[in-house]
Amino acid sequence: MKFYSFLLSCLTFLFLATPAYAGRLLFWRFESNQNRLVFTTDQSVQPTAQLIANPTRLVIDLPGTILGRPTVNESLGQLITNLRVGQFDPRTTRVVIEIAEGYTLDPQKIKIQGVTPTQWAVDIPEPQRITTSPTTPQSSNAPSSGNNNPSPPPATTSSSPSRRSPIQVTPSGILMGIEGNSRNNIKITRSRDRRQIEFEIEGVNISNDLINSWDVNQYGVNSIRLSQKRTSPPVALLTMNVNGDSPDWQGSFSRMGGLVLWPQGGMSRVESLSSSRNIPAVKSVSNPPSNSTRNNKAIIESINVVDNKLVIQGNQRLEGEGSWSQNGVYQIKINNADLAPNFQNPQLLSNSPLSRMRIWQPDGDTVILLVQPALGVRVENLSQPNERMLSLALNNNQRSTTTEIPLDPFNNTPSNSATIPVTPPPRNVTPPPQNNPQNKSRPLVVIDPGHGGRDPGAVGISGLQEKDVILPISQDVARILEQQGMQVRMTRNNDTFVSLEGRTNMANSINADLFVSIHANAISLDRPDVNGLETYYHQTGRNLAATIHRNILQRLNIRDRRVRQARFYVLRQSRMPSVLVEVGFVTGREDAANLRNPNFRRQMAEAIAAGIIEYSRANNL
Image 1 (cartoon, rainbow, N blue to C red):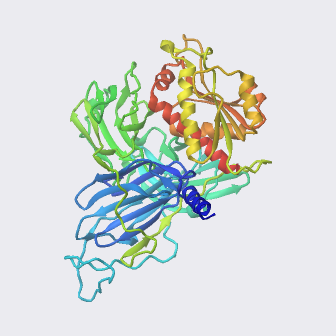
Image 2 (image 1 turned 90 degrees about the vertical axis):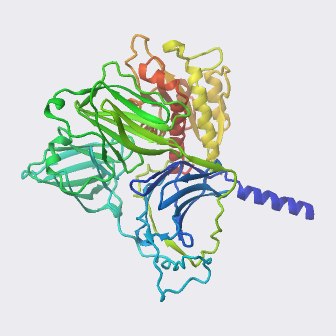
Image 3 (image 1 turned 90 degrees about the horizontal axis):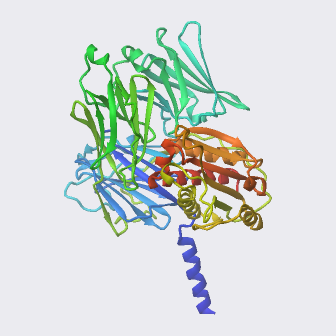
């Protein structure tokens, strides 16, 4: 009996220690020019933070999160010296920011803010030299040091931190930290005296933390007020107080998150109205052009990643500015420019230092490039090797080790530490839960890679076969869901043929909670201009389809061909919420190139999985 008790204890320990339900730290980046750390997880996380003295280091723990790789040690600079990321225990990822010897941080000025439940920003004040005082007692628990460092301020009390503005001013307009998507209708009206512009945003709830008036004082905008006009159905109200001679403003939700506001006719119409405040983190790499140059637009001929550099080539002088957005995307704005008629979208390989890239043309004279670095890659300043070239260095100087982060555990908070308050993200609107008669401990999802074996599915440009595209996407979706603690069954896990009846019979026989069929679309090879994402449902899968579709559009640069209703066999015959995702056209010029790219397929899988996870949690599966 003693042996069985011992065995049971071991199994219990292993069960509790295994991070089966843990989320993952997807990427992080430290922006040296702003002393800001940004990081993203694939599920909601509530960080905790401590400022430790002797030596000074900021320690941020991410409970319920795994790193899935050895500890990373990244060199930063002279005062903020190192960034370490590692697995502190089986269910906690630890991030450590080290400060130079003899310097400390004011804990009251460290701001940790949730942009969304999975996106966080840590703003760090400039380190200050430690000064000694004969009246300042030393902490008895602090290690001895030749610097005679005083103990840091006591832990912060539980009082609420000051509210942080949801407004970010960028070179292209104003980004509001509120959540929505392209389906949220926005009605814009302007007062008779032209000093107020109202944006009525349907389907959006504003959290209590954001219901306030916020100063802007740039681009002719004095302030912006957020309020809730109606709660059922929800309608948010954004009131912009502007100068009377300011142009009309427009607004739409970005696929990368947030509400984007910009003036009609572009930013050049309001530049003269800007206040003397500088836009932070903006680097111009060209002198102001002459009038003769403005009348002759530069043509961007190519954008490529070469030797850990993003290189932009033009036929004449390029004028570029670089800046960071609040959600961790680096923006390169190129004025007085256009894309070449035969411009080819850059392709990102699986080992690329960039995880995403998007090209946007808000008007006929501006090209905006949005890039997101891969895990651990640091973006340097935008430079201009010659007048026809812009270059963005992508620095990956991490050093990996196989050991855990060597820091004293915080089961008991040491006396030489201060607790840092963490500001939660604005509350998002979640769909109402649907009835589910089952009470499973873990949701069961069937992933259905279409076609297979003797059935190649659609055949597209250069012989690209549908079955070869969707199988790796489906396998990645299944892997991510399993890592999140879900039960997953695949209708096929290799290149074999399964009938339509066999697919739905499997889902029905195991009483699955969700059925997600993954396909690639096609049309005539004479129509390479037809590209985009489509997601289908029959009856019960409408909310699931909308959630997956939205997650894909937010994460990938792909055309939106909407959520649609259809009578596909696998949708009609499945007894659970079911959807069919068409991840792009193998016959489309843009989509075929993307679907050949392993990096794009991985991002597609992550987006589909994120939609399934979001729907499952919102509906208590």
